[in-house]
Image (cartoon, rainbow, N blue to C red; front, side, top):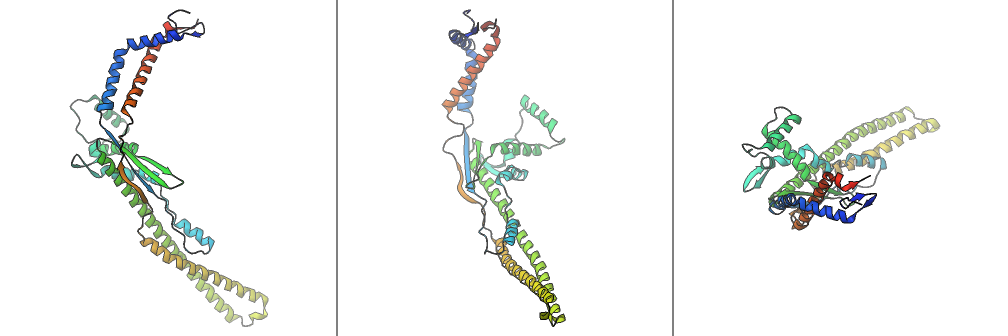
Length: 337
């Protein structure tokens, strides 16, 4: 095997591999030091990152009212189901728009996230800003204003920053975010997000309670009308058939009418009870969301251990430099003949 080949005649020379890697590092040592210094600046002198988290339980289900007719239990239960997903809500444009337009205290100033993140004055010459403007021109609607653009980009950024987890077994929801330089902003942002979730959940619950009450009131009107018709039918039937005991068919018809009256009477009583419960539910302002942990900044800064990050970066840079050198010297280190 030639002394300079790493691979030749179907064999790999470990010695030549070590010599090649050592030589590649020495050859590219300036590039390695430069890239590592750039990463050091970012790791040790970059803006500190703070993570905050809030957790809460939701999907509260009320205890059902007194036992009754299973058919109506099912109907009324479906009328009162809470069709609300926290995960879907925080991804909605309604939620994101509300949060990015909310004023927060940042550097002793009341500004919105849109103003804080994107509504800053551009420098006189910034090539990156021109590239971004070109990208915006290509995929956004024509004539979009600067404020609209700031809000749009802020919603995209917030959507990426907000992390949501849900434990379907326990109903525990966790919302977290990482913010640069401003730990208080992370807490305020999560508090506003939690308040928005609670408010919307209460609105959904209130609407469902109103729908349930309206449904029951409508059914009561129908059942009362039917009940009165059946009662009048029974009165007319008895008045028109004085000798009904002598006729089996007339007796069966009378019993059928009485069964219908009894059934509708039971339904009317049951729905009347449910209507009172629905009226109470409509006025009930208790939230179906229960806070477990208030928004709090983590004691550990986001981004992990800086020394470990630096070591990982150094190894990655070395690996890339060796790969590049292998590609450039491939004809000199590999012998496939």
